[in-house]
Image (cartoon, rainbow, N blue to C red):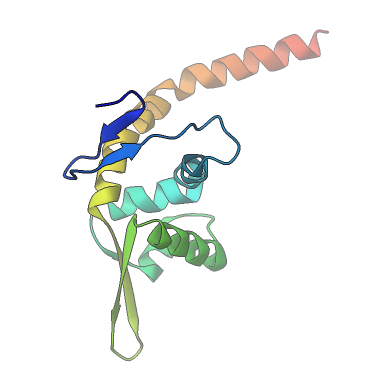
Length: 136
């Protein structure tokens, strides 16, 4: 295998990694998407199973209907979320993560665990920083 390439799990093709430091690298756009707070929260909730739009809206405090719709559409376009429409009255729309997103969730879990446990240290650092600024 050449330097800068890798095999995607479950796939036989070799993928060019690109260079996220390059302005026009497509991976940079993907990092923007998966690093977005709404995307992270949506993917985490869907990691536990399929959910309807209204349940996602109710569970993610502070997200607007418009932002939820836009984020779900972007995640669907990226192949991270699947959308299922059930013909009923009213129409029911449910979302689930794809196998591609399942791998992402595995990678994200370490960051989430770190953030949850490191937050007290980060808050202490912020207070110390703010205190130093006030004494200047």
